[in-house]
View 1: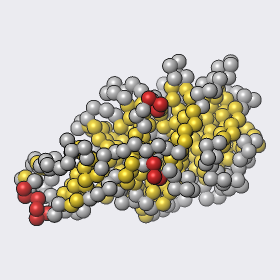
View 2: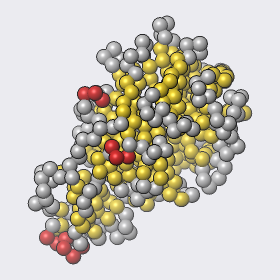
View 3: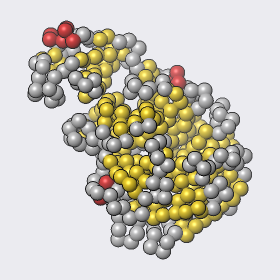
View 4: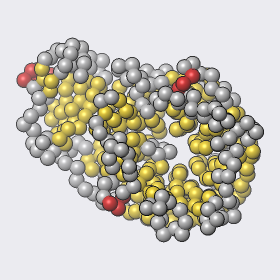
Amino acid sequence: MNFNKIISITILLVLPFLGSAQQWVIDFSDHEFASGIDDGVLADDGGVIAVGTIASDNLYYNPLLLHIQPDGSYSERACYDIPNFFSGYVVKLNNGNYMSFGWSTVDKESVGVLIFNDSLDIISTKMYEADSTVSNIAGGKAIVDDDGSVVVCGQYQPAKASKRPFFYRFNEEGDTVCSRFVKPETNPWYYVWDFECYQIMKDPQSDGFIVINNGRNGPCAMAFYDRYFNETECVVPMDYDGMPLYDYFGSDTWLSDDRMLAFGHNISHEGQYLQLADINLDGSVNGYVNILSTPDTSYNCGGNRCAAMVNDTTIYGLFYLYHDFKGFGTNVGACLFNKNMEVLGMRRFLDDEYRDLYPRSIIPLPDGGCMLLCFRYNANYDTDIFIIKMSRDDFNPIPCGVKEIPHDKLQAVVFPNPTRGELNIDISGIPENTENRVSITDMRGMVRMSRIIRGD
């Protein structure tokens, strides 16, 4: 670790992670055909409206709609009368209905919308053929704009070209207001070449949009678009060493009109990290902390909505982790943190019951808990839906006790101090079977490192 001067080192002593049962689990493996889940949104009754796909006996994919109640009861509708439609993402309209955006599973050259209500009754379905030069439409994230229309961003791939962004605006009836298929002209171009949309947000400083995306070189960027989908700027959040901060991140929390709290995944030559960061909209970073790290296993932030805010002290993050270094099989995890980037709890579902789960979305609930929407590959490489409901108390607390070492007592455990090269921290003698957070803060008050280590 290379730091010019160390101002404070805080060691948080916490109890071991203890098991805690979630409120309930729904396993949809009894579906006759493969099914998957992609997105969800809070319903007026405190439950969740979720959308996905289900196969039929002719191997076509059809929309699947779910209404999941807070007590674990649910209703579902497999839309076999709407074939060849991959229902991707859902928003709640201002009129109380829901709109799911999707695309054709046959030619991948058509986009469409499915409008339905709380009872899962289909109100309308509309498909639109894109330009003849467009192919391989996929992905897509959607938001409701201030005027009640729905804005969708996704990616398409022309023949022999990299993936590019596209935009649609629909009214509440599902009619197309406007659309645009974009050839990126950003400098540097590689941040939006081979484009993939992770999230679209309203820009709090304009009437435009912020798209969190990746590109050819892999790092996650923020691309800015005006109301008419013209790109105005693209920035990449950087760490203190001038390297891209994230390979993937998302946000559901604004700290101010020009700052967001980001939650995401970073890969470096030193290991792989799950991170929280305070990011300015110009790409500069006010501070970040690593909340999970490992040199040999990938801890990735996953899901459509990977961060979900209940209030200032209850923000949920969703991630997955591989079983081994080669990346075969995943388990799902969730963490609880606040606006100050303090991790308050974490659950990692490592039992066989949860093996091979992949998270898609985390939905905050009115009771302060959350719902995890996941799918699982079975032995035949089909998929099953798996939903976990958790209360805030189901998260193992971190920390439950704090011990701070003052700066004037550091000489015996930190050397040399100050340093311009390697810094050694000796914290031997702490109790075994405890989890301990070590944080290093520089002269500006920015957290340069935050890592959990075990007492043994």
